[in-house]
Image (cartoon, rainbow, N blue to C red):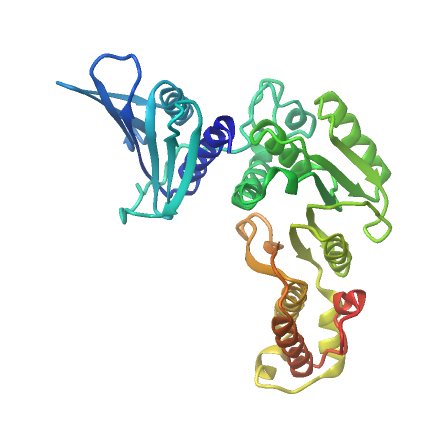
Length: 398
């Protein structure tokens, strides 16, 4: 891993831990720079007048000097000192330790990730300074043209929820993207990209934070939105981002490394997953919506089981149908060699459609495939399901 990439990953780790509240401290040691008598720097979070700051303790041979900075200033200063002579720098969080260790040659750094060594609860506060992986600003032309910010780069009051959603989306994807090698993320496809809020933000993050030269394609069937997004992409000088008019079913491409489909309605989510599976995508990330197909089958079959006392109520049947639909989707992904995660996308206060299903490409195992097929068979029989639409697309053995 190059120095630039290692430093960038270290910076991402700091910002992410500050954003999600897992940050404990930073320790910079083994100083070989030019500042006289400086030995170590320790960084922690403190609260001053209800605002969180990064407090730096500069440890010299005969004295300590304490200075406080905003999050942005503090993170920039950490990176500056790392590059100016600290051979060992460690970020401690409640989940991991992330260390930059200077190589013997004295130029490059190794990035080492270990299980958390400290069990100290992070600072709890209701007034945390927000750290955004997609910060707003006057230089973010696409956020202005999408009516997220005004001409000065300030987020509109009525766009706060959308801006929060954008950043939470990038925060969720960030650790997944960091696990991929550069050559494993050449093409991202966003199926049903809509107005492109999240597509633009992901492109910005890939190119301007991770420094990847990744091609990003948005697929959207509404021509007015395709024209709008392509115009904004040109104005933002996002040269490797383009939007194509068409349906998910009709879209074709030679390569997909990351497939995204957020809130594609009903079986359109299955169409997107199928495209990703067939393309051998390294990552498949979907936020399903409008789970009608399985719910109709459960309603028409009227199968009796131990959950009938719950599903006799329409609202509970709807929720059960959503869980069964996405549960079988996760199983089908596992059949094709994906490790799966299901998590909350964003708080239900902001959107009721908040489940994210993630598939991470892994090795296939024939015994595992047989086990998964049996689980699908049992689940369908239990809930009175003839066939899941994704199952039919993938032509799974029955």
